[in-house]
Amino acid sequence: MSEQFWAGDFGKEYTKRNRVQWSQRAPFWQRTLEQMTLWPHNILEVGCNAGWNLNAIRHIDPEINLVGVDVCQDAIIEAEESGHECYLMSAKQLDMLDEKFDLVFTAGVLIHVPPNDMDETMDAIINASQRYVLAVEYPSWEEEEVEYRGHSEKLWRRPFGEYYINKGLDLVSMGDAGPGFDKCGYWLLRKP
Image (cartoon, rainbow, N blue to C red):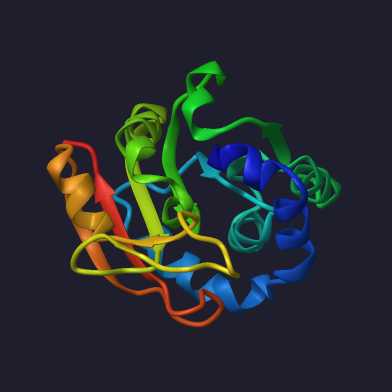
């Protein structure tokens, strides 16, 4: 099962190995937040890891209520040490949260969701959002599996924007996420 893989030793090693300069991501977050019709009051990151994106958003506006969820306990501990409100849970458990969010996003998370779990995961993300959904992921015109550090069935490139549009969301913008995001594209979408 994929969640167990990321919650275990591989996920712990991922957190140790992937140290992000969150300040490189701040310009992306500034541009993205400015595209929203109303400035967000609360934001949820699904798969927050150690809180790099949450740090960048907090730098832009410390008044936004930021929440993160992840399946790796070590990542959650590190994000909490940075002062973030975080919960140990998967995307499929988002209905356990008491609130809806102005923006719900993933960054390098949906690429690791197995094909059979994509619909349920994306539906949970959409349901947790009041207005906007953002995917920052490796793009592809069609789903393609990529071997990941010697493992199969752990990484897929996909047309994530198209997937969300097919679920009824409206595309606001898309493009290259830029510095700090390892060749990821982004899709910002709005609920009708």
